[in-house]
Image (tube, rainbow, N blue to C red; front, side, top):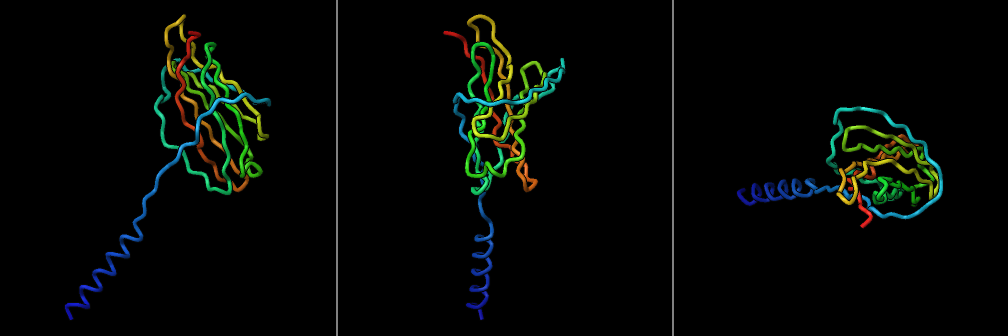
Amino acid sequence: MQIRVMLVIIVVLCGALASAGCTFSKTSPVVSTPGAGTGTVVTTGSASPGGSLTTVPTDVIPSYNMIQVDVGEKDYLGVIPVIFQGGIGMIHVKKIDVKLTRADGTVQTATIGIKKGDQVELDGTRGEGSARGPIDRIEVWVSMDNGERYKTNDVLREYRSRG
């Protein structure tokens, strides 16, 4: 009788362990590559620093919908390129939205085309002279034809001086 009780407890524990899986969030790589294409840019003003300049984990896109959007480095003029690099799931992409939150709280939004190589250049915060400038936050959301919307990038970009 005692063996049956121990066997039931072991089976229940094994079932509980098997059903308790681990999950993690993978961020997409950040690479700067030149590309051609067009995008639409809209800037909204907000004088108070209302945007959060800390990143959050991005969504994991299923392998059959995998795409890549690259956020380039901020150059000495404060320009940040965001480029759609395509991928296996690019035929399912309906829209790519980009949001830039500057250090002063102003927000700039843009939409990138859905063809490989399409890009938009965002006007980030510039530094002064050779001093390091403020940090800007770039977030990218991709909308798919099945109604799903994934946050693929959430990165901070610091001003690079000429030197």
